[in-house]
Length: 353
Image (cartoon, rainbow, N blue to C red; front, side, top):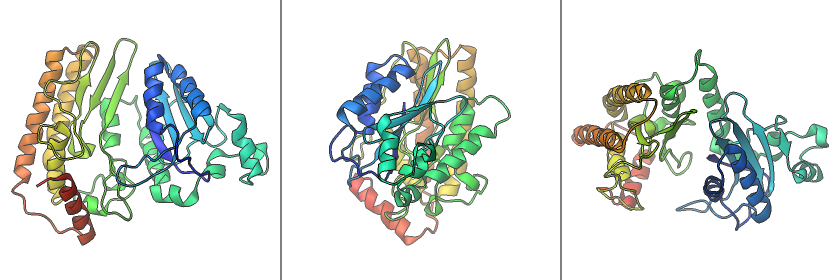
């Protein structure tokens, strides 16, 4: 189940179930995508959505979901206790924008009724979910339309069946800058691999990435376990009858050298000052690693035992450590002052030295 914030004309409630609450409950109480769809709708109608979803600052919003299993997939988008859903026929993506328009398969009775009563549209026939309910300013500021457009371009431009490497590539995408070897995050915009650069125009970024392969025999999952995927190798986190890799430690609020996420983040923060050089060093390493393990796993019908999972993770840690060690002696490139101030402040807050 994937979840994104969407910003609407309706004021979010101060209390209620957050989008991530609904994701967790949908996963916990369901055995299929259809069950999860029905579970989330039932909870939404009974308890409503709301509450602040920010960490260091308050942030309130409505929620969009994409729900998939081996057999089918759905997109579900919500406003207050109202909803609309669509069965996905080929590919779909969600971002910080309402993606459904008039193409939904089913919606709650109050969704259109409220839109007509408030003058968002004139009648049922005139109803367009995105046009009626989108908060124009917040949707523009979140750059959801741009990321939606880019992700769908990448999903549709393939001349073959999408594979795992295609999806890791999409998550690492920097838009039109992909072929620009001098591109740096201090100039970033609405990229899929999202880089935070200042407190005004872009203060959010990717914090972890995952790709799932769902097939009749086995489910298989790759993750970075780290923030920006453009600087992070994907590795198998678990397959059937395995758990997380040995030695993997979760991250908390502050820098912890025992946490894999923070180990990576320390080097990611160093890479901010010499990004083109840092990216050119790490990307050949992780592409070679990912190609080898995916080929190996395909031959084994996407199965791996715990010893193999642990071994892949050990390789990743060694790769990150070697790459990061080389970054510590690199001379920083010139970046704009607001970008430098922003990340120096966060390094201090997170106690990264």
